[in-house]
Image (cartoon, rainbow, N blue to C red):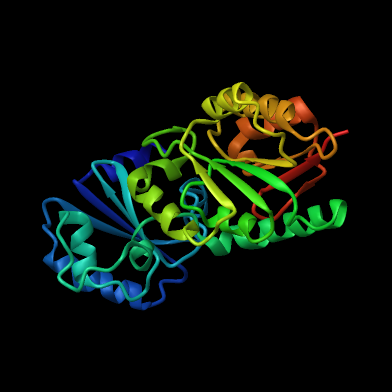
Length: 295
């Protein structure tokens, strides 16, 4: 990635347009409209065929294309997935200006930020929940903890099924150097997206704490045990191990079910911690979610 690091530091703003077979999409046309107005000495754009740059796209965790990534001073500041983005929205990002158009509430502008796409999570999580339902029956009278909720895409999927969902996330900037998602948008923006997304769910409770803080406080306050815990917080080997140990001690004795996200070679810390502490998962799903029913 050293050459890539050099590229993203060539200008203050470096823009990558990932495409397939160089097709002329509306996204590409709109980007080309924006570039002549951008300052040449501070902005440069690259057009990359994803089929020829697969490893780079994989490293950047690109889940869909065409897509535009915008770097500022070597750090990702935005991702555009909306084909019909406007020049005013583009310059709002790179010049920190207010949009010339009517200011939109955050959820309608969400494509400007690289939140995890609900479509990416949807199939894997629904498969996980279907699997779980077949094993233990209906989930609407069950409780769960989600460690790491980010913008709430997965939280509402859980909220549609479980009777109670405790979402544990400190919403702290730069929380995990192993997870590029944490650099993609300010966590204040991410937290706002979470609040907007879950506000109508009475069964979802936001707990703004680290997982360590939560488990300590919950133990001290003798909070009732939980039926299912889903781990998607920090991705370091050490922290995943701590989350698994704490989760195992906090599970309902009748239903000892644990799961999580990112069980893959792209997150070896996660995979090694899971394998070491609980063994191979019972099932790994298409979004790299995993589940284990403990004996």
